[in-house]
Image (tube, rainbow, N blue to C red; front, side, top):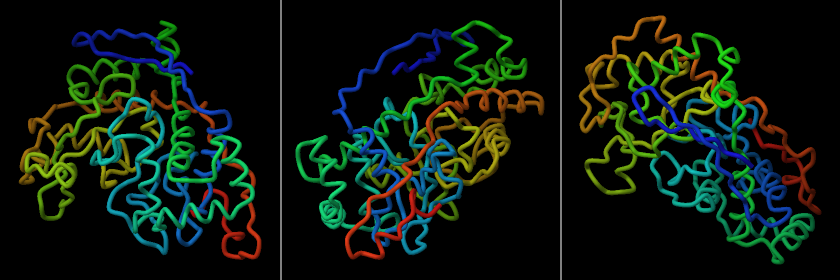
Length: 338
């Protein structure tokens, strides 16, 4: 597949080029991973799949502020898009996973997500003639920790987007492919809006951890990266998300605090939490106001919405494998509970 990059080289100039990512996935690995992604067999109650919180029709993101796991348990963070992850290490809001494979397995055992011990998940897969045969065809082995992670990661690596209106405009040079508002918004994004201080590169993120003011230790008390690093200076820092398909991945931020893009733009326009008067330790976002006009805000939003690629494959498998004498598992739904 082709992945297109946008790299900032001057205040308002961008250099664009294409690079090929040649996957070395085993034949059938992607299809197996897609099946597993949509199958709630990996959750304790047989009702939650990867696709329950990473909904294909919404760029593999969740539409809820925080996701609901097994038995109605609520998580503490918003589930971000599972798309465009090829160059996005480390993974999760706090960066606790260094590889896609590690990321793929973590939700299975998380008590607020799928809550199934990995050994139990593998035992279920081995009881399925369908899955046993597929794993042996692809990996020449029964389901195990390594090949389960490899299959899901193989599918996730295919979820790259390059056909947004913005991409088509920049690579064709035809400014008529987007509105004047999009073009103005792109310019503002890198100048007055100062967005490219954190959002640049192929997916409009530096993959760095930033504190934008959504942590004060009281009502905003998720410590973020500090839980993993153990460093006080990382309190309230979260991984900067990419912006591709951001127009369809609401709500926004690690805690799903904002439901619309205008809410996000207004927050940054005020200087983040510190600019709004919150007592925010270690805010890395400058707390001064941007003084964007209403038209400028709308133009930036128009640019962000131009990053939506509607050509990606949002399909899910049409059937799930059945089990002998297991009514609970045989009643599970494709994609799990949305």
